[in-house]
Structure formats: C-alpha cells, structure tokens
Amino acid sequence: MGSPHLQPAAGATTGFVFICPGRFEAARGYPCAAGTGANLARALAELSRMAPDLFPTASREKYVVTNAWDRVEYPALTGRSVPSEAEVLQPANLSRLRDEIAQLAVVVACGAQAHAALRRLQATAGRPLRVAYARHLSQRAVNSIRGPADTPGRIRAWCAELLGQLQGA
Image (cartoon, rainbow, N blue to C red; front, side, top):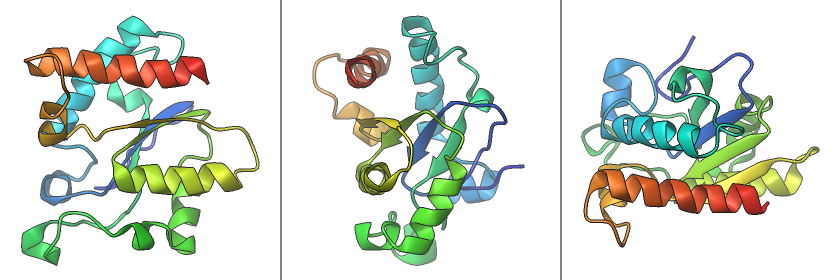
C-alpha cells in the first residue's frame, strides 16, 4: 500500500527517488500525482522503448517511486516547497529511504535533495547500487532542458542523458 511519499512495487529492481510529496500528492495519496507524474509517465514510455533491459515496462506501478523526504511540503502548509539538504541527510531519514529502496539494483535520483540522499546512501551501501542523477521531472525543471522546443522532445533528452549515465556505469 502506498502513501503520498511512497509507491512500493513488489519485485521491482528499478525505482525513482524524487524530493518530497506536495499538495497534489497529499490530496491524491501517492507520489508524483500531478505534472511530475505526467512527465514520469512520458519518461517511462521513452525509457521502456529505449532500454527495455533496465525499464521493461512503461507502467509506473512496476517501479518503486519514493521521495528523499517523506513529509508533505508546500507553501500553504509548511511555508516552503522542499526540505533542506541537512534534513534529508538526517540518519533516521536516510535509514527510512535505505529501507524503501533496499530491493532495488537501479535508482534514478530526481532533484538536488534526492541527489544528496542517494550520494550519501551510495557511499555507505553494503552492496552495489547503480544510480543515475537526473533533474526533477516537474514541468518547470523539464522546461529548463536546453535544446528541444517541446515537452516530448525535452523528455527524450532527459531520458537519453539518464541512460548515458546508467549504460556508462
């Protein structure tokens, strides 16, 4: 059973770590519930086409989707939209995240706080963990991808950069 910060997936070996749940995730009860979720769906369609060995399906339910911070953050609730890096790197928080991704062999870290958490976990992991460090999939972040003029093209560029990291690892 999921929550605003976590979508577990029994048997998954690949997953995504975003920053934190926001108001849409709190309202809908699962991670990546709005625009970020739409872009994740676009990315999974591309990734499963481009690298079916790593991303065998476009169905997000087959991947763990979690967050570097499990608490809901949005300005009207908490006065901010993301946690600090120091909060994300707290030992109790890292322990929670480690448990949530324990079954995974490949993790895609999306956003600065997710990058910080995964770098720390990767440095202390007792087993190999392949991590790709990608920009967040919020529409604002996707719009900042240089090159293509439309969202589908930017998502393809995001996927190509991600796969370059994973296939080069």
